Image (cartoon, rainbow, N blue to C red; front, side):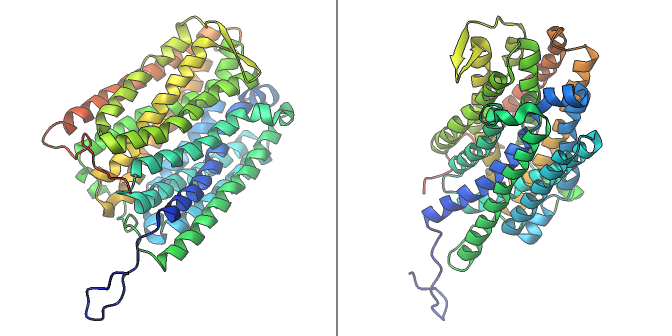
Length: 445
């Protein structure tokens, strides 16, 4: 050990060993795995909720919108609980709330009760993600941060993919709407287990090692909102439109593929899983690439450009030859679209979230991420309901697949805004107001 520099010559604590940091990454990612599964568990039962319980498309959209409304309300506190309690207590608290939310969602056929469960999920899930993001910044800044974010999202998105695959691997449960939601409640227990394992690791590390400093952040106060730079707000705007496109589309995708393209639920779920699966593979690779070459704002613009035409292709392009995959027959055009959407879903988040850590000072990092997530959820509160309302308005159904086209134009319009905001970020970061997003700003550990 290196002797201390004070008169007492007390030994300093060593830095956290790399293996310890990666264990932390695994456990906080498991907390997000269960959270992601519960969030996406509603989509595979959309057709059952409609046929067995008589829900409208607008109500189906509201199951996702109320989640985001709750997230907006709870995130108005900024990073207060995270800042006051620290990441380990916060992650445990929010994981327990997610478990309770999954139970409430599954317990009753009443729409109000089910919506209450989804509302509670928003109360727990989005602050959980902010707490995990803040924890990763504390443990990994300057040490493959983008790669760590990418691996975190890979494990988390395995939860989304598992929910998409559940009509296949848990097929007997899909005779009724309720059993798949009870399964989601059980899987929510993984979040709680991961949260408490992380608690144990950080508590042990606090007594032995030198930890990073992304935890003492300030509260989200109105007078401080406009102290962030233009680059930060361009990233926030891109975040809003990007997630307002991808997540609402995922929410309706299985149902849409069944109704508009005649796919079975298992095939539609498999197809929808290509988005998170592509992201699981590509996100850490993109993160590693960006850590080495920089060009963050340029990569975000490229991802936005890839996203732009996909919803019109899935609406108007010929289906193409069927491809046999996983025991299902999937039209080639739909398969290509979902893989490209998955790549965009990998590239943009792999660059976007870590970039905030280089634009916002450490003491305000919890606030910066909370504000960004809050704005993201405002968009996600509006769009699922709007898509469901539009589907009902145009009479979208299995017998009228053309009724889904209006919703796809909404997604395309939002994607075009994403391209605009990413271009403005790239232009700003090439000028005198640059934060170094176009340069190499991290070094491997």
